Image (cartoon, rainbow, N blue to C red):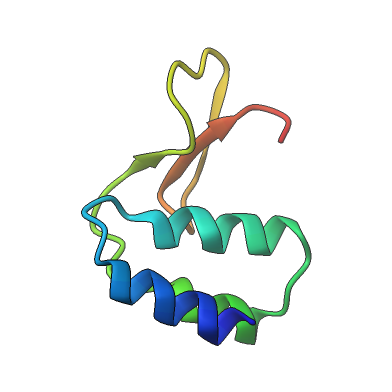
Length: 70
């Protein structure tokens, strides 16, 4: 499943770093490091999980801001 998801994401060639979000969610869902590793690439930018986050935390690993307590 994850290799296929990674393939589709590459084919869509998004400007936004959605691979960071997918990796973050997979990690939170308890997937293995091997499965998550497909999405740990080109993390040049800090990214927000969603708009207008009032109380936020930051994942250094994913360079991602997300709602506190998620």
